[in-house]
Image 1: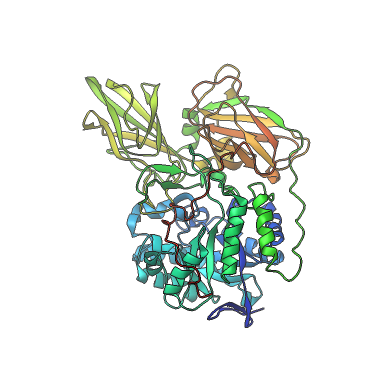
Image 2: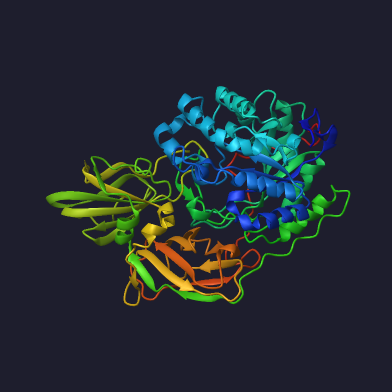
Length: 621
């Protein structure tokens, strides 16, 4: 047992100054069988601490129904065994390029902008969730022999709001529920962010990617005393579907890390190891300086151009960081653990069976209901998945443009059973006018709820209505299909699979295969367009031919030598004969995933605008 405190200049362990050399690793983005390896990699890089968020929506998918909330405790135990301290960031909001910033859809749907404020109903739901979660943290605090040394209050609140009453209530709740280690806040190094997101008596930290001197000067204006810490050193960045990948030069990033440490500060690498946003949990951003523009959905891989890549292997950035961090240790750094086992011979898997999308919806979806106006995903209790809307166009009437107003995010449209186009929020009018009478079907998918900015918590689906000329079409029939419905083994057995030998298309494909040497692999999906993939019931996440991600990470623990099953839920492909997928071995950061060397912004605009560089020597370190 030990005592960890915040001093006037340093962090103190039993009264002795210590520097935190931390790295972000999200337990929910790494298969549990690989936690030990990834934590050992952090130690080998020269880190003494691990930081993790906690996604509320993953653990409470329905009000009061908790799913594996003990995962955090098991991860913290693994961190302790690895010889690492732990920083916990429980939210309730986490950003993290995670669906809805970690907030449950069943909460943001009815509450809207009342979340992340002093609203009594919102705080009541937070109290219930923290009541389930925090005992795992409290029991593992450093003064009880565990690894937990600090806990965050909210997350980057200064880039969102200014409700000090809310932040005070969260801090009081954490203390009431037994958190005794130091609390902290983290925000961009901007005056308005630090005034909006920090609390008197609570350690304030800063998040940035470069210009440590400038960032810490701003922090010192607000906090003349206390240890300096960059809680998020953005050593890489995340990618969006349909955009060029973002890659940061390893030597330049190592120089920025060295600058932080030369300021006398502690640091948390964001990310040290990113992992994977399995099961469609990747979030989205909005374009533009105010984050109010076009939707930018995040890819499934959370590789983040981190020093430890998605497959758990060291990169050039790992070795550059290790060289820097070694200078802050009195003993040699540990050796790297053995690399994860990779797949032996590659295998091509024919997708021999198929169920049409309509039949999948019939078996796994909710009951079809009729509404006067289109219900949102939230009203149909769909977090991740699709909703089918059916409208009748009255007739007879001449052809008129058909527009979907307030579409979020992507709709494949059928008129009288014939594909008529794909609509998005920006391109919301069918290419060809529609005459009446006709039946219009919209198969709408959420591409990820916004995780950052003022549009956090926005609803999904058809949020305004369908217009024929200027007339709303009323009397819509809707049914939803959640991704977690594919986890229902009993209903999955009722699906009417048939052979793909003659024809197949939009729907659920299935293939079976054996392996000689199971291990970490990549799943390639040639010829497929957009959807989700499962291996032995584990949802690997979304694939999309839009790129830049071209394959999915498969943890070796989900594979076996015999009788493996792969499912592909394809949402756009119209016709295919004898489709197939391929498994190949996992290698170091895959060259076919990222080949563009576009530098990460010095202070990436998705988090905070760039700040001016102050005069050298202005930081009190």
